[in-house]
Every structure is written in structure tokens, then in C-alpha cells.
Length: 135
Length: 290
Image: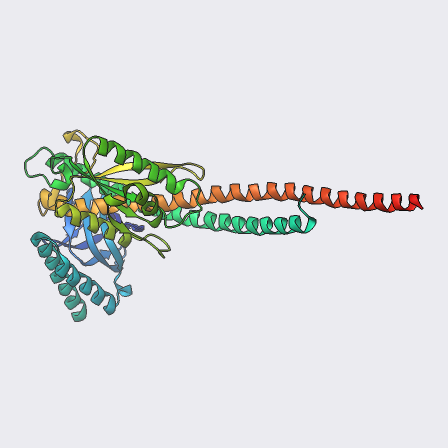
């Protein structure tokens, strides 16, 4: 089993988590990926989804992240998320609110490219809501 | 000379004012601590964001098809000034300083033949710029009733700016706010938002990252976020500065009120004594006359 490495989860408002962890699974824009100790330097954008963090000792923490970026460097993994909260705190109506937001973005979008980006976010949010309901 | 009753009333009213300024000072002190904590908490994110951006920018800058947000439109004819001030007054020169800096910039830009557009954040800035440059204000954002600035507020400002940019309304965007140095000194600052201002670094110092998706896509995703973050940082600094400025202004006011009370009490006592003396003289001279 791989050794622990430094993991930091930061939102604009505060540093949410800074701990030694064993494994982190993240929802990347191009697909989910897992990070273990000694990963090569790597940067990926994230889609709204759930980050699964495995602590040393096997405890698992699930955190909802939206609008972010993951950076793996020699010193560890840093996730910059616009919004992040433990999955247990995430209520169904908040997801519904996020979806409504995304829908408004789609209708309000000024340009075609903005509209496409908003539509993509909406689809991602709906995926997530579906996945959570199934879980 | 003012009558005793008048003096008494004045002393009472100054005392009441002093109580208010004292209370405001203490409230500002408490709020300042919270604002500073918030500014502190936002720092890790801002630092990391800049670090990642720098790495990316080194690779992309100078190449064709670099994102517009990074390199600009190539013109600098239309300037957008985002002026962030407080919602409330009674904080010393805080709002005036920011407005003055913005006004100087506007004057220079207009003299150079540029077109200027203004977006104000916060009511006070809008009020003081409206007099001279009201016709230049394209939008006003008010954060009324906002207890503590959240990232969402910064996002809403950012999306406004991005909308204008997407519509080709301006070429260069500058952000005005007050940097918090200490309770007694806040420095009005102008920071360029678009095109992004990044310290130039040697390409060799950038770590070799693997990117997913490609670098340009990440950069495109990241730049608007970085702008939002910059606005957020500015709003937080502003909040701390505002409370700091209010604290020292109210401290001054409290002290002035104290001085005034002392002076008025002295006058009151003198008047009282003069009246007693006068009455005594009247009685004594009355008795002597008999």
C-alpha cells in the first residue's frame, strides 16, 4: 500500500482541509482519476462532483466540490474549489438550487460559447444529482 | 454669555455623541478582527491560484491564440474602472481616498483621449463619482445589507465585468480598492484586472506538469476564476480597511468629544461661579446700603 501524502483542500473563503492522506479520487473534467503518493506533476480541472478521500487507517471522507482545479506537485496534492462541503451536509434542495442556478446561467448566457459552457455545467450537475440519488 | 441651562444641554448632547462614537469604535474593532480573519483565510487560495497561473502563463504567453483575458485585446482605447468602496460613511477618509485615486486616473485617461467607463461597487463610491463623472458610470453594484463579503458577491461582480468584456465594451480593466496596511493606514490601490498582470518569470523555473485537458483549456477555465478571486481579495481588503478607518476615525471623534466636554464643563463651572459671586455682591452691597 502506498504511503501517505499531503493533501490540501482550499476554497476562496478558507482552507478546508490540510492533512496526510493515502488516496484521493477526484472528478476530473475528462473523467475521474485517483491520486496516490508519488504521482507525477499534474494539473486538471474538475467538474462538479464528489471527492473521495481515504485517510491513513482506511477511513473514507466524501466531499462535494464545484468549480475547481487539482494540482499535483512534488509537495502533494492541492485542490482549489470554488465551493466545497462535506457530502453529508449537502441536502437535496441545495443540489436543486445549484441546478436552478445552472439553468438560469444557460438562459442568461450572452454568447454562444458561454451558453455551451453553462449547458455543460448543467448536465454535470444533473449527472451528480442522479448519482447521489442512486447512492 | 450662554446661560447655564444652555451649557448643560450642550454638555449632555456632546456626551451622548461621545457614547455613540465610542460604541461605533468598539463595533468597528470587533468587525475589523473578523474582516482580517476572512482576508487571512482567503490567502492560501489566492497564493495557490497565482502560482498555478504563473506556471501556465509562462507556457502560453507569446504563443498564438493565447486567451484574450491574458494578453488583452491588443488595444487600450476603452478603459473600465471598477471602483470598490464602502456602503457606509463615517469612516474617515476611506471612501474619499479611493474616489480621489479613481478621479485622478479618470482625468489622466480622459486627457490622453481614452474612453472611460465606470462600474462602482458600494454606494459611497457611486455617490462621490456621480457628481463629476456620472455620465461615465455604466453600472452600479450595491452590497447593501451584506454582513460579510462572500465569494458569491465577488462572482457577481466578476460576471458583470466578463459580460461587458465579452460584448467588447472595453479593452483594459482596472480595479480600485484600499489595501489594508494597519488600523491607521489604508492605501488606495489600483490593480489591473484585464489583461491579467502576472509577474514575468523564466520559463525554466516552471515545473513540468501534465495537463488535463490541455493547457489552453485550463487557462481559459482558470482566468475568469482568478479575476473573481482578485475581486474577492479586493473586497476583503476593502472590508478590513473600512473597519480600520472607521475605528481610528471614531477613536478620534471620541477623543474630540472628550476635549469638548472638558472645555464646556469648565465654562459651565465658571459661569456658575460668576453667578454666585454676582449674587453675593448684590446681597452684600444691599446690606451695606442699609
